[in-house]
Length: 369
Image 1: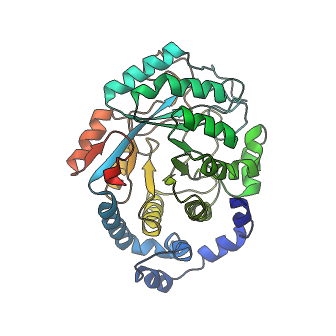
Image 2 (image 1 turned 135 degrees about the vertical axis):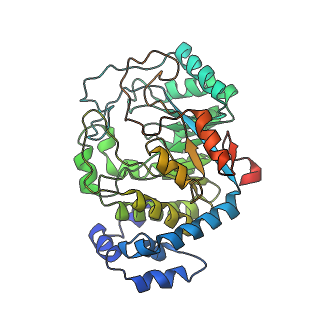
């Protein structure tokens, strides 16, 4: 049994038609409810809900403050490698891009760690391209062992692994894993992942199940907005979340909101997602689930990130470098994508505090969960 069984009971085209068919009356009916379910979520992400955005945002803000208080978690990604064996049309690390490749050595990893610790972080996200021969389980296990004494929480965003491999990494000190489906539309997924292990849609779809069975403490999911209709992809993400929460109920969950960003080998978004669309979606997720962590990266602009703080986001990155060695080594490798918010960690922390929030430098303490 896996999420695929649930996934196969839904039809993309039928969902898309339904989501675009809702009326203002449907939205008003949903907003009278105290508890929101998946059917209601469809209504809240529909075009019909846009005129109600202010009301939805206020409700989202109140729920987030009640559940998480005036706190904002900060994290930072550390890219270990940009080597990759996949072809992904939207990614700067894609195998077909003729770029300098780099995988950090032990010395370089510790230099990055030293720099990141000076910024104040106690929660780190390790990121690699998908190159099993170069940055496989043995490399990841060694990297976690090398740095775990420096951080309270270690997360990874790497290629999907087998359950036994995740269990090895958990034993070494791994706390969380982020794995995005990119898009839940199978034909579009194949179009953007024509070659490499990542081209296997079903294997990637079942990855959170393997994570749950392996006992990973927190699982992060999401879709890359721009590849397909964001409303339908977001419903599938919500469906995935609810399945995981029911099946692996001891695990914590997070959702991220990446929009396509410029990179080498650039692909234009098939469907535009405006800033107001993204606000609508973030708030709809919060109304659906008061416990899920909602994360915002430096892909988004300064103005957007400043204004989203109070509306439902609980985790935010700052001063991100998306190339291996970007914090401490003279950059010789291409970044995965261009960031938009280039402010320093100190500037972001000051901005958060100016809005009346306390900065949390590691994953949530028990006081906040």
